[in-house]
Length: 126
Image 1 (cartoon, rainbow, N blue to C red):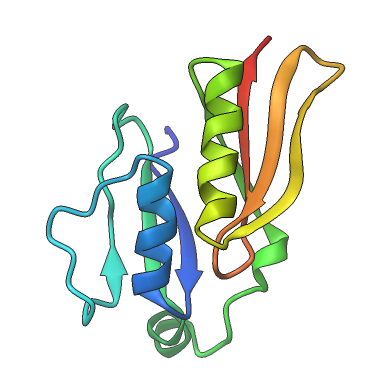
Image 2 (cartoon, rainbow, N blue to C red):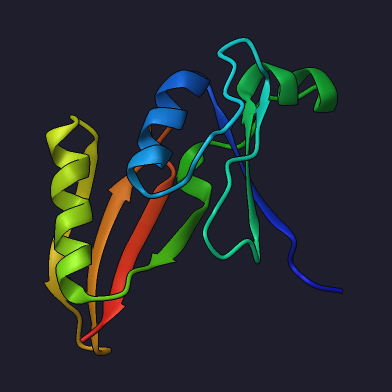
């Protein structure tokens, strides 16, 4: 068994697509009416699935868990990339939870939030 995908829900798929595009994900066939998005990543090892909040509710019969129950991390090539990505996210008006810092575990680290509140860690080795 291997990890294949990470799924998040979104109340505004267009806004989520904009956010994740800033992190290097591409949406080749983006359609604002779609209820499920699978952006393309450079590595292709684990898929990111973004599902409409109401779609998941209709399948499970329950509201999805609040976004603050999960997070995931994206590895950058350099500490300066962590800073640049965080700056780009802030300039577009998205939430920065913690500005970049040199963490005691040897990484340049920042924590941002997607439009639905999912925490996304951005890091690189120092």
